[in-house]
Length: 450
Image 1 (tube, rainbow, N blue to C red):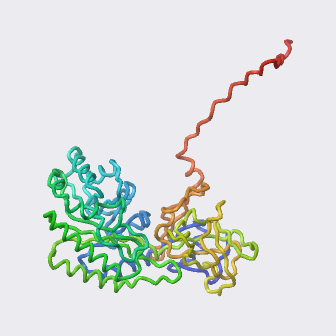
Image 2: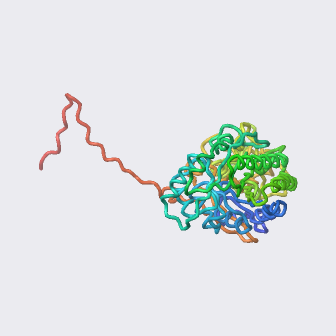
Image 3: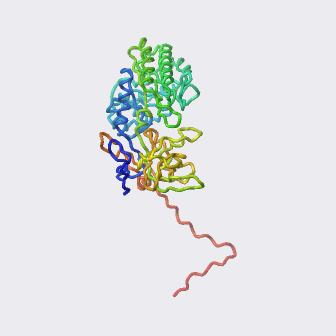
């Protein structure tokens, strides 16, 4: 056991060194109080009629989902496993929406049979498929299946680091095609289209851009509903609220975001007072709360540059390569063993993988690092292990720990070797037949008889 330094980093008073010794490293550490404060601050600022849904793709841990549901969040899911996770976390079926451009038959059947809040259909063919499936599946209720049409808007995204609409995309139905979809929608028998959805992009850090996108989505939804003579029961305006990771990025002014969104909602309410409005958020709700904790195994110099070789790397934190950037930039990284000490030198922090790309921080200023020290990659609560190649080199999934109300909970144990091998099936090749002798080569005589 490594003796923790006196000034070691703590979460809600719990020393990280104790958690690292108890659960092992590498591990993901989530601060439940940060999640609670982030949600409650946003909930207090947003118009009360705007519903907040948690996007499980950001972090599908069942305990994280349960915590956010306890605070009032619905669930936006994109796979059968995420649907089951949300339901087991306590989210009622009516508070779940299911997105995704290529849902399987099993996923659609589960949505229909459970009567979820809405299936977000991303093509007209998918709407027709749901209508046909609903006619043959036994359902607990005779009510029609609720469907929301995902629209790929004609307007351009503002402020997104990763655009999801406004250009050719596999997501949604082009706005001009939705406007002409009346005959298809009127032919539906088991489905009721209750609204429209658009998601413009992710990691937006400018409040004015979020307000612009929200206003544009609401306007497009109103125009399309009028063109289709559709009762607009629901509009999902997406989300995309960003978390700053890199140098020269500023935190989102959430008060300004709420002001802009509330203003757009108020204008929309003038003509659509009863329409439900959903915003779906993932990264913003959980990103700040997570720290990826690794332990230094070796500290070495190579041609004038210092390296820390840690026990975890990009196999657990693929986002550390730069969130799609061509130029590598560092997440916030700090010493957890000696957080109060000043930086002694720059270290490149790497993982244990056999690839030069396994770098989670390049030339990071840190106090002197010694083998056994703990290092934390901060703002790592979103798109961590679930968005990483955890099976690369067969290291497996890291442990995940949630600190809630001052108590640490293991919310996912680390994979063992047996966990990794259990799904595999060994095929043993048959022994090769003896080779026939080459022509002209005498066959050796067998042993003489006694």
